[in-house]
Length: 198
Image 1 (cartoon, rainbow, N blue to C red):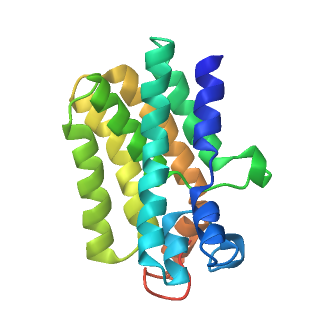
Image 2 (tube, one colour):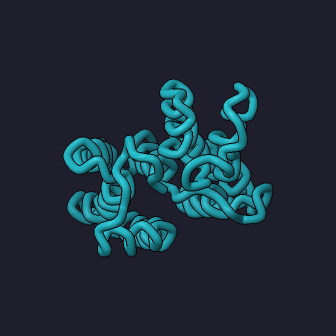
Image 3 (tube, rainbow, N blue to C red):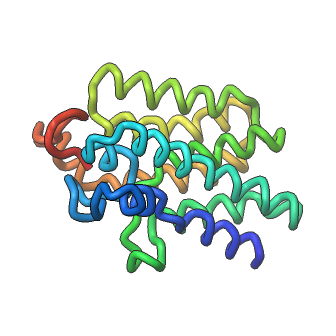
C-alpha cells in the first residue's frame, strides 16, 4: 500500500503547471494543447522551463521506484505503475494529467539504477525519443515510439517480468496519445515549433 500511495503522489505532482504558474508564464492548461507536459510548456517561449519540466517529470518516476524499493523492498514495480497513473490521472487536476513519456523514461531509469535492468534500456528509450523527435519533429510519434522501446528492450535483456509491466505502461501511453494518433493518420498532426502539438 505504501508503494502505491508513494508512487501515485509523486507521479501526480504537476511540475509543468507549477513551474509556469510560479514564473508568471500563465495557466498551462489554457496554452496550446492544454497538456501539462514539457512540449506544451515550450509554447510559453520558456525553453528553460520546458527543460526543467521534462527533467522533473522524469525524476519523479525515478524517485518513486527508488524510494519504494528502499522503504519496502520488492515493491518497485507497484510504485512504478502508480507513478505513471498519478502523472496521467492526478487527483488534483480532476484526473486530467499528462501523457507520461518523460515519467515512463524515469521509471525505466529507476530500474537501471536499482540494477534490475541494464543501462541499455534507458539509453535505448532516450535514443529513440530524441532521435525520432529530431528526425520528424513529431513529439507524439517520438514519445510513443520511445514508450514502446521499453518493453522490447526489457525482453531483449531477459527481464520478461519488467517487459510485461512496461508493455502495459506503453499501452497506457498510446491510449493517452489517441488524439495524436488520429491526427498522425490524417496528416494533420502539427510538428514541434508550430502553433499546437499535444
